[in-house]
Amino acid sequence: MKYAVVFANLQNSVLYQVIVPDLPGCSVNVESIDLGLEKISQSIKNHLAILAEYGEKIPSALTIEKHRQQYAIDNPHTYSQAFWAIVDIDISAYLGKSHKINVTLPELLIKQIDERVSKSSHYKTRSGFIASACLIELGKQ
Image (cartoon, rainbow, N blue to C red; front, side, top):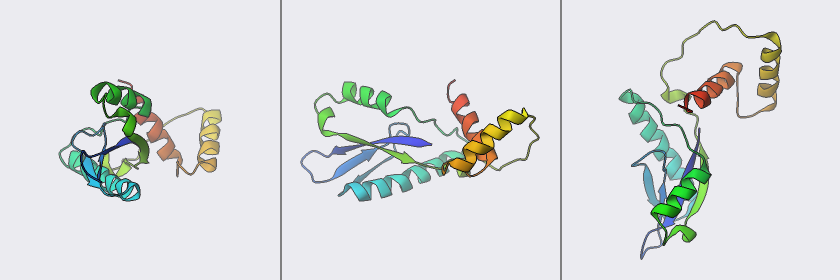
């Protein structure tokens, strides 16, 4: 899942506050951008682990454009000083135990999936590709 994160300077400070709008309460304060990306990635993983532990749904990520628009409305005086990044997190570990199922698909579709998987570093397996497509579709609700 690609989560948008926003870096904002804390008032009267050299620190950045890094916030994940899709995960309320998930934020860190850091001294550098590089450290911010590292720490917010870990914070996202910790946040997702807690959600999974309590059986909560993993929130889908909205587009960075939607977040920027809302941030501009919520923070009109500091919007121009904030900047955005995307943090890509493999959420499969937070979705629960895997179960093997039997799925019937047309041969041409399977070939197209396999071709995409073989050319992409994002998808490691056919199952991973199908799971990602399902998560995207379920997130449209």
